[in-house]
Length: 317
Ligand code: CP
Image (cartoon, rainbow, N blue to C red; front, side):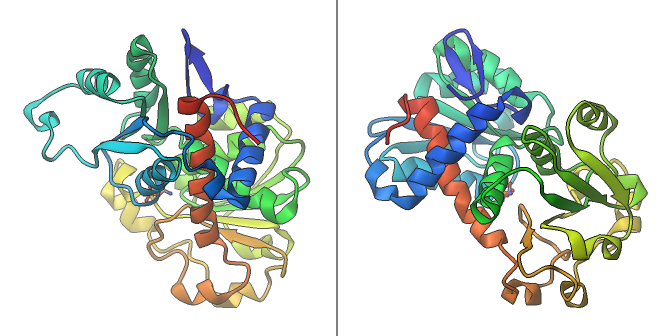
């Protein structure tokens, strides 16, 4: 099974909890699904997935919905507290208890670190699996899985790569999960490109010290751009900045310009978890290296693989 097991139920809360082999199994299964999605259209017939989103989302929520529908299942849930009893003051714990009574699986996105783990501890009493769709600035595990699925799809491997991460490395949960995922696959070089105030969180930095990743830090993308295989750009997480003045100071400082693309290798990938704000101008979309929409589409196959395993049972060929 994928993820952590509490009692009899497995949950996907964090990349930290996954072993390399579990990740490879998800990627392999998602690859099979991508080759022939209609083959899986009844896998979760009769099952219901609850989506509990306390924060805005386009890709994560709608690709989980699409994945569940493509597996023959149904969906319920909410995309904001508006119109739910959260507005009357109902707690996270009671809300999850109710969803665990109604559905066969729960996807949660919440602004607090630790929220998905708490939800899993509550839902496991009902043997209902919980999947994190993003916990504060902590982790976004399914995003990292679709990111490395896309990288493996193009390079055929997840080691020996020169990867650059640019933008908000401090508050971006996709960056944390992607680094933790890459750290499980042999040796990779990671170039961290950010403003000094947006460097990696200290706890993550300490965790990565124990891994095979070779980490290089710079403030200037032009120092590394000609050597990289993957350029992963992320927006400034304005909603997580503790001080709006800091956001004003750094906004717009890490943008990809078409002039920089002249130095990017033909075989490189430009990825972004999306949504973008101003860090990748629209004119870059026409460059063959720009694969962020393919990356987002791969989220459906990854989430089909995860839902199938957690709600359905064993992988099938
Ligand atoms: N990448 C991502 O999490 O996008 P959404 O916020 O739209 O779900």
